[in-house]
Length: 203
Image (cartoon, helix red, strand yellow):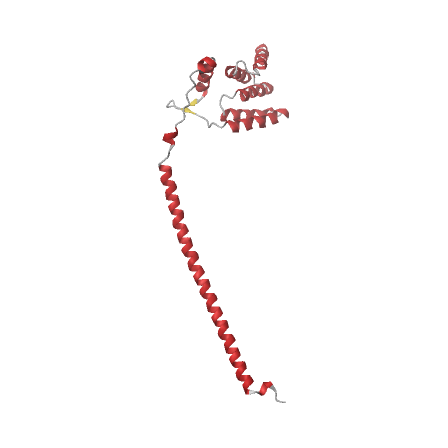
């Protein structure tokens, strides 16, 4: 029996097979390489296109910002027609508040940011400190509430109570009076009057 190793037909068939496999592997390699190059070209083209579209969007936003519609949405902040009748003591309180704003050398008043939600949160945190008898921390939060909502009756009352607890009677009196100017018949007016009477006796 002849061995397949010495057979010339077998050697010829094996050589053809090896060349065919090698050719197929080269073709697969070049196809994959071409696919990678095409993908890179497409991604760079997409990036360039997205950069251009991002620049176009930014230009559109800038154009829209320049064409603001704020002229069309002016808000009327004047008092209601029947305000003087419904709130007879409010004009004095408003004048006092306007007088308490800080004015610079040119006479221009500095107004604080208006954020009633922040003021409400500051009052809640102040109440937290007040219940724990940390009157200094509570006082800071109540004053911050007045910064964000100048003339807040509840914050004014709480500042007065904290000042009274800390022994600053002049400041306590000032804030109790401020509360009574804002809400002369408010829910804490009786307590404010009692505290003012007590502070008056302590002079």
